Length: 296
Image 1 (spheres, helix red, strand yellow):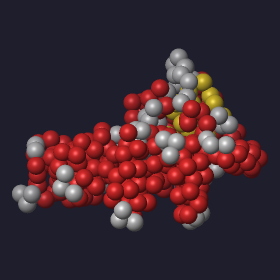
Image 2 (spheres, one colour; image 1 turned 90 degrees about the vertical axis):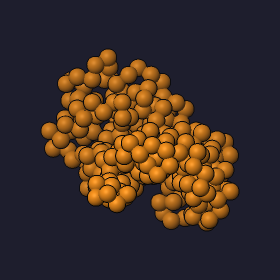
Image 3 (tube, helix red, strand yellow; image 1 turned 120 degrees about the vertical axis):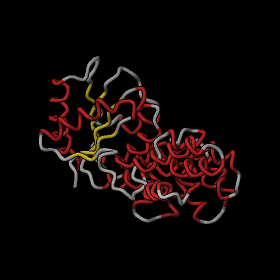
């Protein structure tokens, strides 16, 4: 079990590394990508497992993380698992409506214009404090979440859907996801699309994954690419896998690399396979080894 999951946008990695170092110096165990992604685990699986194995979360908040669907997904998971969240705000920017919803009841710590040593020290103390009020915050949060979802708040409905998934109630999860997705929530739409994929309903999967991808959800883009690949639609597959790969999804990078290698640009394909391997994708590493042996 880790003390803290560190969530951040890739552009803020330097600050995130400083946060991780300071927390570890205070003997607080950290989970942070890509350091803790085990080889052979997909990026999405690793994130979910990392959140589940953590006691709290620190969000390095900036305009980049504010716009990141990956950070939103991580915060979603933290709230669903009732993790206390400390928002380490390194830039004076307003959160999006959905992000504000998830973080409004949490602990905010300003660290700008420069997130220096005093701010990092204050962060350590904040992380230690937030655990104290965990039970009361959980009860208040559950009540507010249900009230907001019943009033039509899409972000709240999405979170209730994720909580239902966690307890294995797929019917309730789909009900909340559909409510949120019909209001345009990308994470809910992605979950509906993934469920449809599991039911082999490619038309319904494509419909909802498109909503998710157009809303900026990386997982949705990756799965649209995989669906297009299955249909031998090379151009569509390359487009959506490219979106997923650029968003940091190792599975997307691997599949993009193989398609580019086989259909368009072998050199560029190798570069994306290397990205996939660096993200822990076993297939990417296997393909690179085969190519090195002259087998592909």
